[in-house]
Image 1: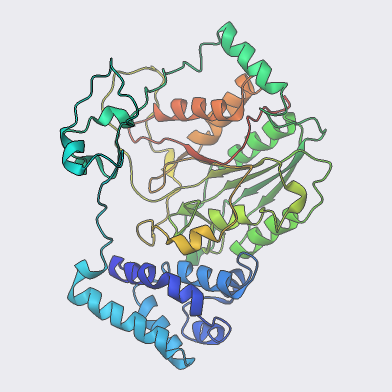
Image 2: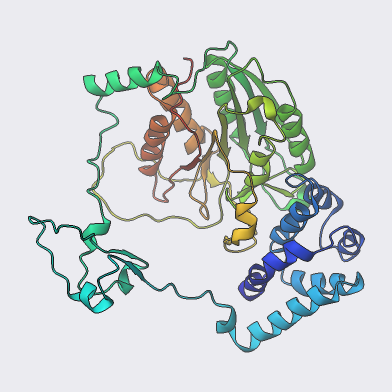
Length: 452
């Protein structure tokens, strides 16, 4: 779908979610081959399964269904008697073609907050001696893009002093003491006392059907063995499932979420596969089943929300994704070399990229965001930044998993998870000619120390 059609959908999304009658659409969507039966099932299970949740997911997924998705969807609306919505989309689409600026988001304007007694002209000209704080007058605060701030307001009032960088590898006495204090304090760190600590599911997709156009992921079995052994040593019950279709992946994850985790303290999911960009609200990216159909990372995470997995409420749920976030190759920029062991991608290195992708990541409207449950006690660690490839060596496995395993082996006994992932990001970022940097979406409420 081109960007103009995406913008039309986003512009109309609030009304579509409010009024769309999805039950009447399923057969038409299938007949016009906009969605497969499995995709329809996923949409019907979205969120709580309500009409609004289904409508919201349908509009999100529609953006990924190709260049003719919007006109075909408009035809489906007309066939099912939803003429008002069809007319809204058709009119908006025609207006967008005639005047692309008509659907461009409004430019942000700066808002100046200050004492009521000060007029805008006085705010612009106000000068303040920092050594002589004024009595009874608050310093003005400017909200909005920096380039639009009034010229004479001092931007430093908006910028608290940046914290001093901390060397996570220093291993100093004060750092160790702080880690120990956090580890023993239930208010600062998750309690991981159960043995086993929790379940760990590893999905390892290596061989893909010919029609998918996806290459065999040689070297992934090495990653799988590393993660299986590592999480076993961290007191998890590890289960490995190989070469699953998209539907089988969802089924395996739902089955894990429905187990009773009441006596356990944590849950881990590791996915090793090809990946791509995907439309999303909270968690970017998608991973491919062996049949060539994608499962969004957001879908994977939401299977373990409070509704789908109540016995993990308040407990950390960790997701590690080794897959491409897109097709871009990062050339990096020149810095002084910090490691003589940098490796370059040679004939044995290949990306977990796909031969096709659906387009740029999109931003959702407030209606969809506000109605989703707030993700809590969740961490999603990605092998690469969204939009870029993730490198895998056919002989030694992926850079990300190899480094993750090594860092966990050295430091998991004394450092929290976020510090471990910083070490992983730093170590991976210095490898190779083409660059890669892992990242994470962290919604954990506390520090997490593995039971090493």
